[in-house]
Image 1 (tube, rainbow, N blue to C red):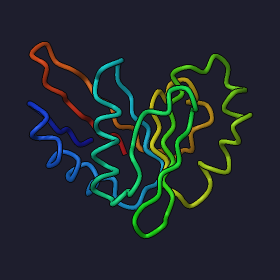
Image 2: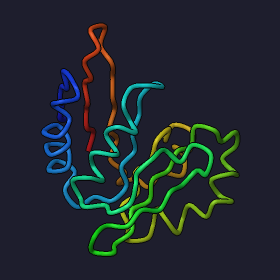
Image 3: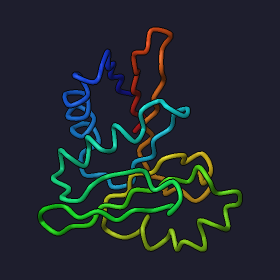
Length: 139
């Protein structure tokens, strides 16, 4: 398990670089953390570092946003916060995303854990009392 500490937003770039190096070529990344922990902020920085050309924002109401890297490869950003039943993920056609060849960045994966691929990377973000973020990566 890898642990990365972010003391403030000026440290996010280096932290995400470390995170991406640890993740390697794995494609399904599940971000766990309470509301306001920084899941979307970290995903935005990941997208910046992997050359996503589109504006990155949370897909809270759409459930999934599709972005494109400069090289044309798609990246899918999911936010399952608002789903009430696993059937909503089935209706979305999650299999095509999760078992395709594209990078999938998932917020609120605890709502769909039973359908996450076994090789999904769990990224857990904890906010300390002094506002630091502790990111742990379980491979």
